[in-house]
Length: 497
Image (cartoon, rainbow, N blue to C red; front, side, top):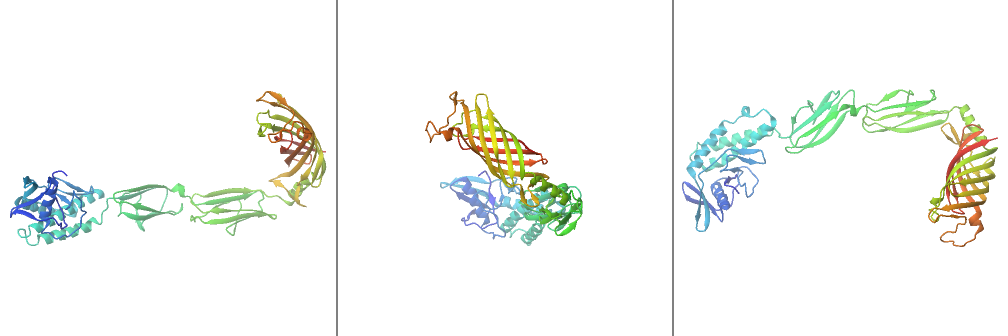
């Protein structure tokens, strides 16, 4: 502790030490303790009228030996005392002060307080708070000292000081050291904070705690938010009204006689439908045409937008799609497909070359059945494959008599086919730099196995996208279960005749 002696408004239990009628005295194990005991000495005649936080460095809330005392960076007092004497007595350190000088400074402080008034406060709110804290600190200190000198001061000094204290306490409640500043960009009609209309882009001094502001506008969603003001911490925010546009929905269709319904109300297709409700509600919408229906939900959030266009088909168009599907049901088609055979996907042959393949299939279809011969030739830098097999499988051309499988206007025919036959694969092992035409696995080390090394057993999953009755585009994936157990991906043409 520095050379400071602090007075408090609380009664302390330290014993009173008075050398004589004109000297206050306090002793302790060191100078710090001596000064505190001196403060206790002066306070023993005083009844506490207010409560301040106690600490070892601030017992009474103001300093006697510094020009300025600060509490929480806000309260200050200019009470300054000198001529404190420090001495050693009986292995103790003692601090003494002359009572007459303390009285002179008390009178000076009373005169200073008499000149305090609201008009003398600074213009800026935060400065007002600092000044009011200083005034209240001076009054508290002066009440303490007036109690000490009540017999020599004017009769109503303490009472007048207490009235002055009450006045400035009430005045202090009207001002706050923390402010809120809300800046609004864009058009708005009103800003309210705690249900009171306020100006934007202005510092508004409010008490600490929870608050709420609301912004209303005829062009934008109402904005309502909560915020917290902490003591001596400001709250500033910028609100851009363009981020709070009313939600809107635009739904259109290729069929202008389709029916649009939004939240159970019929609306005009293609128009921009704006909602002035921004509360996050989900509203349903749907579009119907010729027993076809598209639907969804739209959320009423600020700046939310939905723009969608749906495609529907007439009975004539649906009939045409159905005819395309039927063209695959009883016909003969030639498939010419390119594939990329991934040998390295196999666990046992991961160091082998991958191969480009050409497949040709002559497929007959009868309703849901597919069958016919096929062949594969494949080659890479060092590897070659030959296969001859028979296709047998199923296809799904329609879901019903009048319902085709479509991706928009494109008719699709998915199929699953088994390919069974014989082949010869001569693959290049890049790690050991040799050609291999037999394919034992780690679990099957038998050298010769005809079905394993020359048999073809594959599954083929494909989808035909029909351009017209004669031409389709096919994509496929194949998995081989014999030889090197490779996987092939590819695409090609499906030609009807």
